[in-house]
Image (cartoon, rainbow, N blue to C red; front, side, top):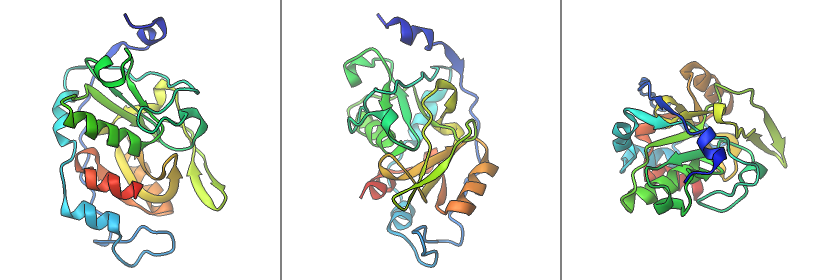
Length: 222
């Protein structure tokens, strides 16, 4: 049985299958490293050579899917075990038909960062566990802040259920100057114009979910 808190927030909704135009990195292989916008980065090069992504999950988002839940302040990340509420940046959650086979509990997997979300989801896919839906923070739906800590710009985290959108509905700003819990991050916006504005201010490259590869995620963590 699901606990009462989970049931209260686990109604279903119909995925809207919003499709976004594919955006390629500006100026070809533009660098996104702070202070260097003239040459190709390792991350961009890895993305260019391709790899196996989660594009196959698009079919999993058809029909009714579980709603996002509010992540508790003391909930630990199911990938790296850090307390999610104690760190900045995008957070994520992944819902499975048989969650106990994935996290040993009857709840969605929850993550401190977009990179942990993708890493865990790729690993579970290898083990034969395909998610019903993957959610990341939608920065188009929140009033976010970018603050500087020890010379590093960090974007605020938002744990409430209404702050999430499916990864298929987001345009991701990848490897900008703004960090999350695990460093270089993937900041999602449901509004493509807002994603472009964020990219213009903080750098990075624009990706749709279907273009995110294992190699790209690994490069952000390296």
